[in-house]
Structures are given as structure tokens and as C-alpha cells.
Image (cartoon, rainbow, N blue to C red; front, side, top):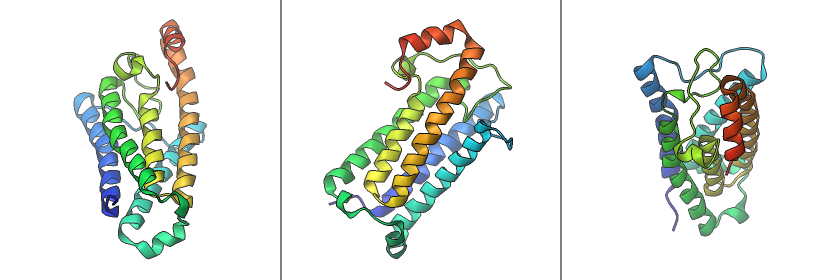
Amino acid sequence: MTVPEIWLFVYILLFHFLLFGLRSFLLWERIGVRAFTFQNKDDAHDWNGKLFTFISLAIVGIAAIFAFNGIWYAYLVPISYLETPALHWTGWTLMLLALPFIFIAQMQMADSWRVGIDEKQHTPLVTHGLFNWSRNPVFLGMLAALLGFFLVAPNAFTLLLLGLSYTSIQIQVRLEEPFLRAQHGAAYEQYCERVRRWV
């Protein structure tokens, strides 16, 4: 027995609403700052923002096809040998654990949370809670959720999105690290010595 396909679509909508929509609204309401820092510049940061937007929209689209149109799903090139109950439930477990994990990490960032690099605001360096174990728990949770998404709906396009997401997150981390080093100096260097990039 597997979870009905409609629940994957519901999860994806809830994921985007809670972790990006609601969280952005709460930040705006609290301090009047836009969470999304991507603009329309011709630099690596904003191009990565465009890739992030594309990935997010594609995930919603694929989840909708998976839930509502079995005929179209065949065009996504399903990987049939990965369609097993064990992998299906592993995927759901990863997704269900990732959602609160990411939300907790975002809340622990408090007013420092952004989507992208905010060069206009000086935000405190967050090193407590989940950040005491990983320098990037939000991204770590996102990768877990995307791996889960692929295992629940294994096809060529979810595999492609998993690869693109991994690449985009690695790029973003390497853009953020020099920024944080410049903004926080020795405190960030000491943090990097104590806590690993991922786990």
C-alpha cells in the first residue's frame, strides 16, 4: 500500500507555503524586510536565484502531473525499478522529517533568515540550535526533502531536478560563505572551525 498521489501534491504546496510564503510574510510583518533578496542582476547570485525559481515551479508542476494526470506522467520517463514500497516509504519519511527540520532551522535564524544574500542588512551570525551541528541545516533539509520527492516519484525529471537542486545549493553555499566571512570576520572563522558545512 502506498500513499495516494494527491498527498504528494498537497505536501509540495504545504512545503512552499510554510517555508517560503508564510515565513517570508512573518519576516516582513516583524521587521519590514523582504526575505527574497534575488534581483535581476547579471551575476552568479541572481542567476542562481532564477535557477531556484525554475526548480520550485518545476517541482509543483511535476507533483501536479503525478497527482492528476497519469497519462502525462508517462512522459516524465518513470524509473520503474525504483517504484518499490520500501523506497516509496523512505521518500515519504525523508519529506515528513525534512519539513519540521527546515521550519525549526528557519525559526532559529529568526530575523537573520533570507532567501539569498542580503547585502543591505547586517544580520547576526546564528550558531545555536541546529546550527550548532550544521552550518547549513536549511539547505540540508531541502536536499533531504528533494531526495524524498525523487524516491516517491522516481522519474527522469525528478532526478534532473534533484541534480540541479544539489548544484544550485552548492553554488549558493559557496556564495554565502565569503559574504559571511567578510561580515562576521573572526567569529565566522571560529564557527567554521567548530561546525562542519553539512554534518
